[in-house]
Length: 314
Ligand code: ZN
Image (spheres, rainbow, N blue to C red):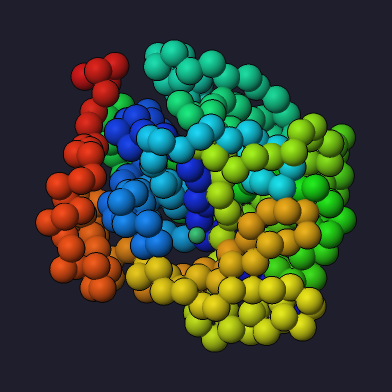
């Protein structure tokens, strides 16, 4: 049976590009690994944040668009995005959240402590300590590598039909069911990052897509062959996967699982250094070859943004 290593990336919608960069790079210390545009809507940025190389399992991506209406987190969505921090760094992060005036709560699940908070658009995030996963060597602002977020720990899915979603996680993506604790079902995949997926059984409202919500979650395929096998398997099982789309940094196939969440299967290669060296990731506006001729137009209309050290870290 085919098994995914875990989460490849998570994509969400927000209102303001600079505020988004200030939070994910400035506060959380993630690296902006790619500044490009939404290939389907070139007037909107597509920003990618991850570890120093933008390894699969570390990357959260955003479509910042000021005019977008606010969404509502609920059924049919990824409800919470979980990040892992090195063991022993939770006090650092509590102090850091307080320093930037970010309210958080602390709770326990499956023997792990989670700090939960929201980003400026209302996306729900949490941090938990774990030994596994490679150290992120990216230092930025007040976040040194010894405290840096390593990447995703996992995600909490707000499925409208938990048993249908369970079936996809286990029988299509090859995850292992770990058990139930209170209202959470836990599943594990084989990678060291983005490997812990919880389904919350009783979230309240129906989700509405818009700013402050996750658009989709992508699962890792080793290569294009692996992805093609999944696409056929999905068709055999009665799902309707899209054609394979070229996202420049990976190939993507999308499908709706029956719990209402948009899933994607994304290839690990070629990765973010395909069009600029690792040392320069995220600095320049990168365009796919088919949009390069319109560069001047995009550079004039997109709002200028920068990765900057925040006042509290100076
Ligand atoms: Zn995606």
